Amino acid sequence: MSTPQRREELAARLAAVRARVDAALAAAGRTDPVTLVAVTKFFPASDVDVLTDLGVRHIGENRDQEASAKVGELAHRDRLTVHFVGQLQSNKAGSVARYADVVHSLDRARLAGALDRAAAREGRVLDVLVQVGLDAAGERGGAAPEQVRELADVVGGLEHLRLRGLMAVAPLGQAPRPAFARLRSLAEQVRADHPDATWLSAGMSGDLEDAVAEGATLLRVGSAILGSRQSHR
Ligand SMILES: *Cc1c(COP(=O)(O)O)cnc(C)c1O
Image (cartoon, rainbow, N blue to C red; front, side, top):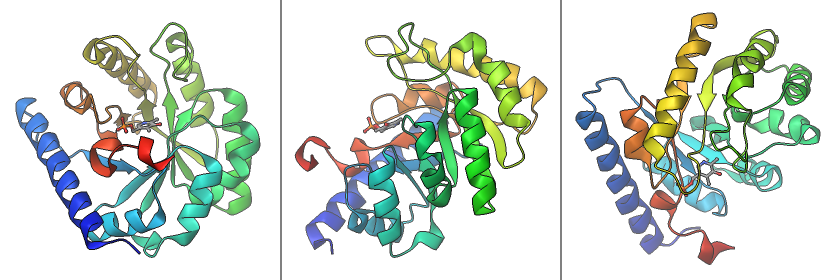
């Protein structure tokens, strides 16, 4: 159970983030909607329940063990779309396919195959984004930009995965906006071959304005809504 103080804190933080998103959309002259994914990693199911009461309909998680346990505890699972946004090992595909609706972090063909077979076993079709590594070192995960179209074709050919678009995390120590612009142009190339791949997942607590300016349709926002993860480790 969450305390009244925690409810108030989450309500205030969420309202502030929604205001930032609205301002960013207005600044970009956009009238199309953006989906706010509350990244709830490190925080308990009780916080997710509060956010659900506050109108949040999308949550994100980045570690399989934590996510599978937490999703099982939610009071309102039926009202939520669950996004898996973290690096994923092929041997976790079976578990993720059970509780996730959207996977943002598809970065190699082998994982696509594992996820497709797992989704088939569950009788489900998963929405998938190909993650692009925008930093040269690849330290924030993702496929190399020159491999993205080929990987998109692989995902697009699988029966139990639905290719929805691309995802990226801004490189550390660089201005996010040019990186997101690069992501956007890659997404346009993928869309030429896959017209339904219209989703663009970019933008976190620190750079959501830049992501909105470059056409993000999904924002993955953790600490700005839930507070510092440091105190929850
Ligand atoms: C944790 C995480 C986020 C949220 O980050 P914040 O800076 O807390 O908003 C977004 N995307 C991914 C892939 C993450 O792992």
